Amino acid sequence: LDVHLEICEVAVRENGRVISMAVLIATGVKRSGEREVLGVDVGPAEDLEFWRAFLRQLVSRGRRGVRLVTSDSHLGLKQAVAEVLVGASWQRCRVHFMRNALATVPKVAQQMVAATLRTIFAQPDLTTAQDAVERISRLFEKRYPKLVETLTEAETDILAYYGFPAEHRRQVWSTNSLERLNKEVSRRCDVVGIFPSRQSLLRLTGALLEEQNDEWAVGRRYFSTESMNKLYEPSQDEVVQALLELQSA
Image (cartoon, rainbow, N blue to C red; front, side, top):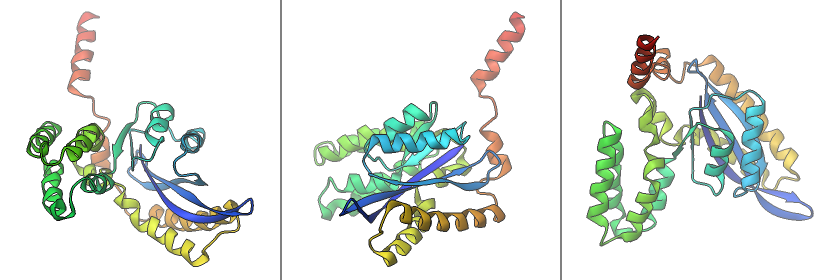
């Protein structure tokens, strides 16, 4: 239903050279509200074919009905999501977006700009969040035009979580839920240093992720049953359409 994607960079020896490879980890939340590890793979971080093949592998193993994908804006990833997970929304990780946005302003202004941008995510609904984006854009359009450009381009993607129940938003608006797992994978990989092959890297990360999946299986639900049911309640438009069809029949 909801998929989180995160990567970490690891050194791997391949064809006589040491190259940087991305460990791609996907976790998800099932309709029951339970969280699980969906998959892991190793490949070039900015390669569209890599993203596309990974997502197709998830689909081939029955991962269908995805409503939302949360990730950083890696090159090609958004396109791969649109091609493979048809109908799924894409939520750009707000934490990574904030880093990208703050990089466009002088360091002395970053604290003030960060506090201002955070007001966007404190809004109760999509309409007020969009109003906040417009207001902030007007505020900074002369001083920091690059910031405004970055914000405008990312608006739809950083606000995708507003289309989901309020109880879910804190968990889906960023990939922070994967940070602890990603840090543990990175820590264990740092102990090894340079991996002799992709296969050896996959064996290590696979073992770590299997342990994590077992912990989640016996832990509490990530989302409650009540909040998950809200995703399947018919919208007002759907109710009206159904009534019209009944009347016409």
